[in-house]
Image 1: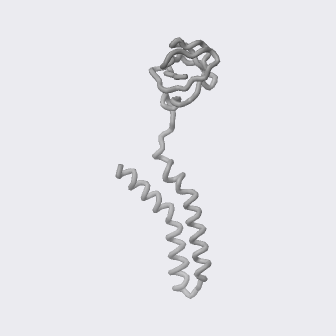
Image 2: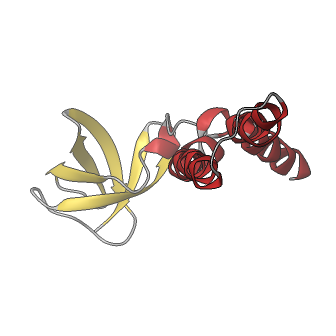
Image 3: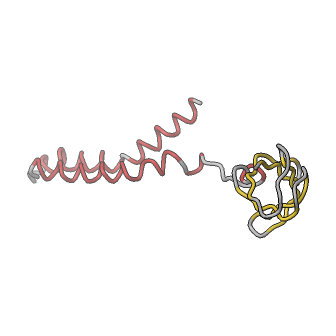
Length: 129
């Protein structure tokens, strides 16, 4: 768990690198060589950079390489399928144009009904009404 937080801290520092560099340039380097930038202008530039980071940060910190793609059986759970052959309790459902063997977890489901996928056993979907 600490490894993930450390990685996010490094991502956040990398995201803030432009503010750090621009801040040093505007408030330390330019005045040191005789170029005075009004305080309001420096703060405006810093505010715009921070606003940009607030927009971008959720995408960088919440996703990227840490996020696992929802592929395979776990990617089907929660989706809705259409019953094409009565589930009593087993039958056939259609999902994204493909036919799947399915088992109705509680009772039965008739042709034309929509069911929610709650699990996968091998190549069989486990569904509920």
